[in-house]
Length: 351
Image (cartoon, rainbow, N blue to C red; front, side):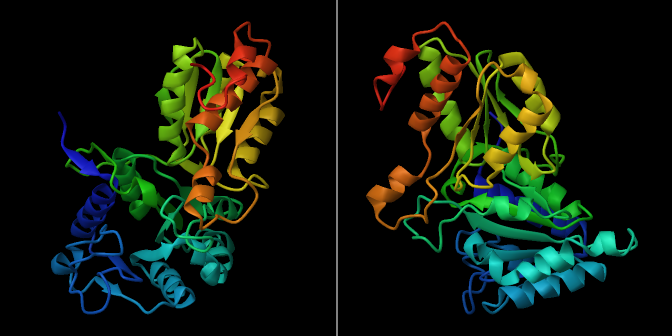
């Protein structure tokens, strides 16, 4: 068996290796060391930067809770030759630094005709499931995907988390790196040596024939669970993890839809103007003739994230909702299966 690391350990290892390789890599942000007075023992609220302060005491430090200030400082540092990795903590507070992100970092290369770049990484965690309430649980990657000039990364497993972080630090453009809180302790095989996962190159998670399922971040694991349930009922799905949503590997999605004739996109964000709706629109524009029926999306409700544990559990898309969407897509596509009976049940339609 290959060496095992958790998702959060994989992120920390990528940062450590890149800081060892390149002295221009610096890191700062809220609780980046572990909070004032903690002397690096914590390494962020969840531990990805644990131990880095001891190895690089002059290149990693904490900042006050001033997102606009330290993201702005990172843009300036990047334009001046450093490669900052800034820790924003909760993605919910990204809006405080929007001017620095969408008006400065994203536009720098374009406005200077390629003579200037802003190679910085903004690390931030997102997603529901930790009982964090409406202001600490949102999935806001759709907001920044809308902005030209920003690259957006949504890793779903430890291997990709390390390779995408390494690529992000080496990239010449600003990268927003979204880490799902509920994946931090997920283990997986991770090589010890440095490696990159290229942006705009999706991962084929599972091959199938009846329906294409595109899933983001934590939703990839739920799609795999749904696939087992569907397979028991004779429905074969192909799962694609885009890894990055800007750039997006459109060609792999098109090839899969041409093969299966159906599409379901799973995205832990509200439905309006979501990545899920964007991917459906792209397929409708470019491969409509390949679809054998309407595409489906699986999103959260269009509401804030509830604080009530019972309501939060119902808010998050899960394997059951993916199973139902796939069966609806298959039925709409004229599939000859046993869908009516399956839809009669809500918890396990393919049982």
